[in-house]
Length: 78
Image (cartoon, rainbow, N blue to C red):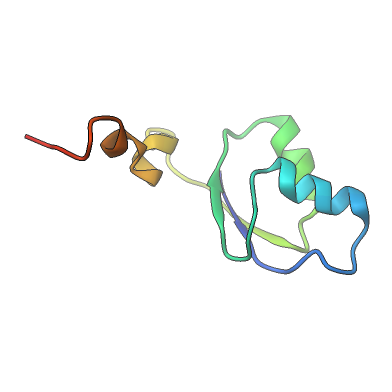
């Protein structure tokens, strides 16, 4: 699942801010990819008013979304 941080947590409880951080969201409009697990769903439910969620295809890995595989080999593709 693709989770996007849409609304600031300023003015919300400390535990909601901690949940945003635990999801890996640092700045507004930042995006993270997580597996669809009950734990992640519970965290998203807790801050559903601050984030938006999109389902992504199962064959899409987090590396493909972030380009991390390009960084590992220096960005050289042959």
